[in-house]
Amino acid sequence: MTTMRQDITKHFLLGKFRNPNYLMDAVQELQSEGYPIYDVYTPFPVHGLDRLIGVKRSRLTVAAFFFGMTGTITALAMMAYMLVMDWPMDIGGKPNWPGPAIAPVTFELSVLFSAFGMVFSFFGVSKMYPGKKPILMDERVTDDVLVVAIDMKEVENREKAESILKKHEAHEVVDKYVHDDLFEV
Image (cartoon, rainbow, N blue to C red; front, side, top):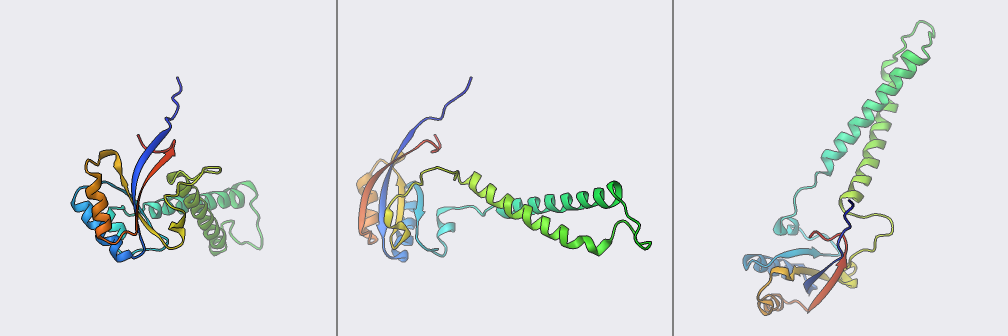
């Protein structure tokens, strides 16, 4: 029996800011009041925001290490097979396993496996695949607008959330309904 993914529409309250300091203050107050912040969208990095909203440290570095080790093992196994077992050559009495001469190939395959592995891991984890339509909370978030998205699923007092956003200089507060079949149920 195959299960199909459900189409899900989520309701968000968006607070749009022009100043990152006001954005940080609004996020702090919203969290202290218990409002569920879905995400914060900014056109540039805002120092300390990731810790404030609870973004965990990326495990992509660990994945990179394992992909790189896979490349190293592949390179060494490939060269051991080629140089020692498949086609050993005796050139001037030199050994079949030429020590330092294998370093460049080992390094290059380690870097290649690591780079491709990280790219495919990132796209897989972030659910970015060819043909997927991106979810933009606001078209201007790529230019000059900073957006706080509050998940309205568990919010009881919308007016209080809106007043907190406006108190911290949100120049616009709007509702947004987003439809995507990859939202977590």
